[in-house]
Image (tube, rainbow, N blue to C red; front, side, top):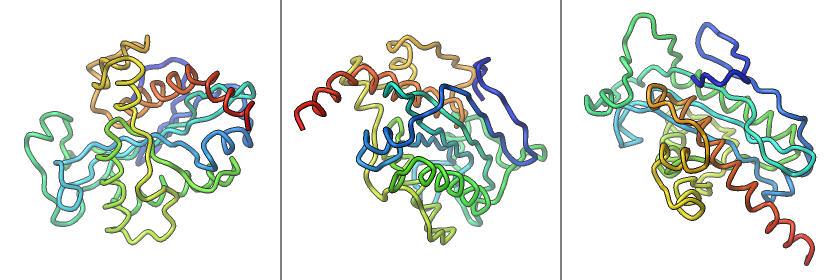
Length: 232
């Protein structure tokens, strides 16, 4: 989890919910800003690279909120540890990178269905509260996270997935354009944020840094966006 002192951490038996209290969002503005889509950052930690065969081990979602002046800010974070689904593949190389022991007795993991149901339920409520039509996934190399999310939704037979099935915002691409960096750690540093390598490969930490990166890039383009509104 992030060590950001501005966050209030609420410990739960099976996951961690992290809330932040920025200025209250103008709900109608964020719906207008992204054509009815609500950007939600998602990061996953997995047991490999194949979303259909390899385990989903951790998933985090971070809301993007909009202040009354149109500035984007990082909002609430949800993170869940996930039990490998039955028959899931676990690659030793992937576990070495993310440092996860899927079967540690003290690991507060939920079943994949329970974790996905909780996370997507919260996101559906956020979509409704903001007056948006559906969520759009924001991720660093978003294709990877979206594929794992979609595969888990299919395995769990979840009927009400709030995310668009294929559209996404990729901060690796955005950061490459804005800062000339595509690696999350380097892009985060180029954007002026601290990077703690000890926290990296935690789904919550990576998702929060990705959210910060997305917000600062969008805020830098705020003037250009407002120019387009002026000519409509």
